Length: 253
Picture 1 (cartoon, one colour):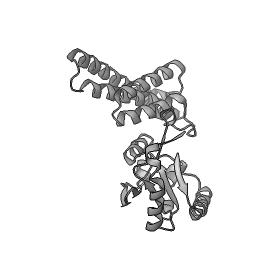
Picture 2 (cartoon, one colour):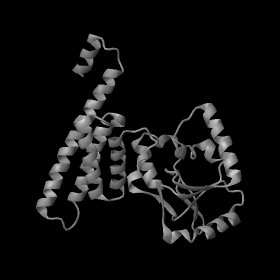
Picture 3 (tube, one colour):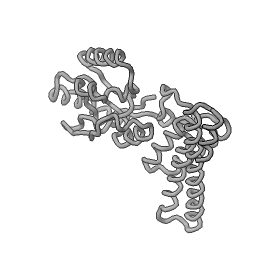
Picture 4 (cartoon, helix red, strand yellow):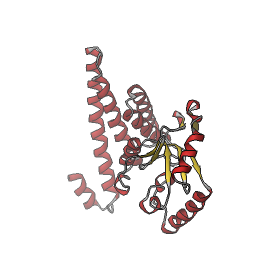
């Protein structure tokens, strides 16, 4: 799923030389990754943000940064020393129990402080649009589409976000897939409402079109609240023994 930016590949050799001069014991170099702000948005969505340090990229040489928490491993170079260090670090993680996906695991506090990690900036490799939501996550197709739609929303690509989220929601309603996965339905409705609301405020948009989009956004916000309330009720129901009195008490709340 990796793609290369041909116009930047010519700088890769120079960047590696600069890295060797900066740190001849480097372990891993990202050639491509998700930006820190996109990563944080996904971590917030998945409830992971409190478990990782808040670090921005820190420039260390022309074209090189000491990276903040970054999602994605579609492009990287590992040194021989780095491969040994990574094996040792991940053996420790396996013994303690895996706490995060491998790309996030690189940035767990104990791992990160022992890993000499760098990134090319700008990157020389990227990820194709169809693979933005990884096939290794175990998530259903519609849930991946919701995450992808959220990424497009953050990037300001509103038309693409709206199209992606509409398709995800249509599949959820038709099949039920992904609707309860991490609150997929109410999050998809909320992101779609946000995208429509933002589009309704774009300059130069006809007043009638703006009003239609704003009205549709309000309707989806309302649906999102209803779906969130239903999900909360379902979670509470599943957390208690289904005794008649307990059920009656929940329904009365």
